[in-house]
Image (cartoon, rainbow, N blue to C red; front, side, top):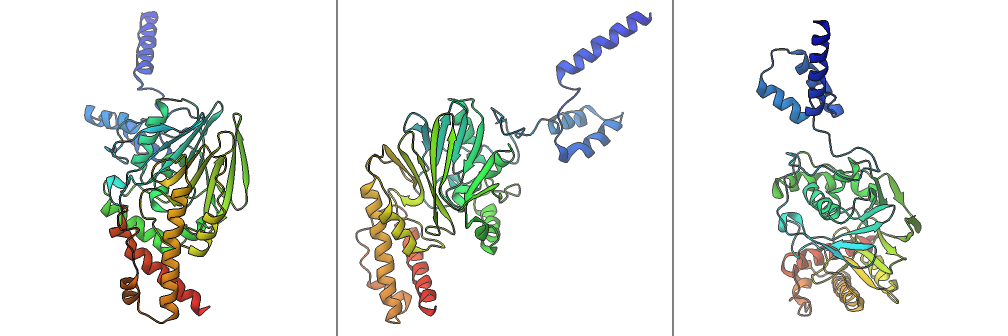
Length: 369
């Protein structure tokens, strides 16, 4: 009889292990509640299903994790935008956001780049929501199972960083330029996130958070991975509080971040237009296979886009500088400028007046120094 009972127990244990009811991995945050439920021997089948659901492993295991769970997650509603991973060179791919304002297309307006090597994957910029970042991972996993080892942020603006938490939770190293902490410590970063939780709900919600970088880049940095060499160039405060670009030397592909907007009017936020103009003037494109901008399509011949960005910023700065020196009001100065060269560009109507005002205000501040 004892042998029969032992055999039945062994079969039962094997069944429980196979069904996943035993040794389920539990996120740290849910251990307490799950233990209390396990102690309740009279729990209903409905409660048991809830426990099983809460015990599903989170999408972060370690840096070398080769995949991420893309099953439905209430924290990250599945994005319904059209997204594709486009090949630029042997190792470099990119995802192109759609032209629009920050609240269009579920926030999918910016680009991200993916560098796939035999030893791992490096991502440049993380898109505008965790849901978009998860969709990007889904696209990546269709062509590679290499681990994600680094995410490099070209700058800390909402449309490029709200997806970072997906990678942070996978324990991937997050790299960002010096100046990032100025953004993270600002009241504006918190206010904007609170606003986007309403205006981009459910894609940005109570689970969306600001992610701190693991590594700050303040000088030119070389990264080598799987035979691919990257030059990370620290630019300083230009388009944002801190900017960098990534040159994939092995493939001759430059990832510019928001120093370059292609096919639309640039967004001028907390910008040092003088340094931005200087950076554009010094940007080297000789021998490039392609340039991937922060917004818009990848360019094989980027000189036209670079010049357009330069000319737009120069017009803003020159006209607003004269207005400040002549003590003209912003409204008067804005009406006097001929904007005809740029009026046809997407986002002109939505962005141009705000761009001009921010430059006008920054020049007023400069004049008082």
